[in-house]
Length: 143
Image 1 (cartoon, one colour):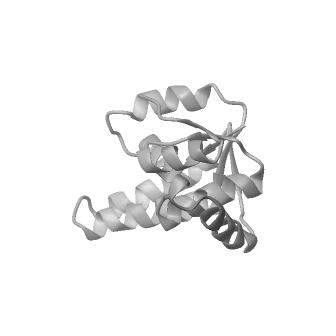
Image 2: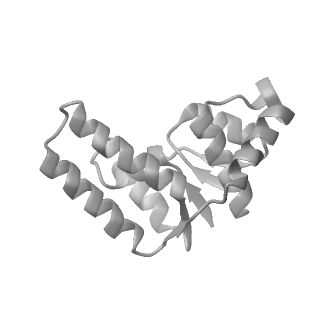
């Protein structure tokens, strides 16, 4: 079981240099957890791309549908998060501070991993990977 963050999840619906390697890496897993945080962040990034003028509204809507379809296939499992994820994030930040520093959404992803009982992460966010490793998680950046 592995946790997939937003930076890697979006590569599965928007072609980028690393998209193929992420798809190959994900295909090796029996279960890939995608939190409600990663799903929300992905949908917001899709909308932001349209608002920046990167693509049309119709493409934005299509990407949102593709994301939903992807998350309804194997090996993906959607997981909701409790409100306790914020407390977990605060505890992590207080306990590890500068030794595992990361931005708020990254901290919430790490707290989500803790809440979901996942110890492995697939990401393309170098800061998140470093913070995850500082907490004792296994963080992989497919290249």
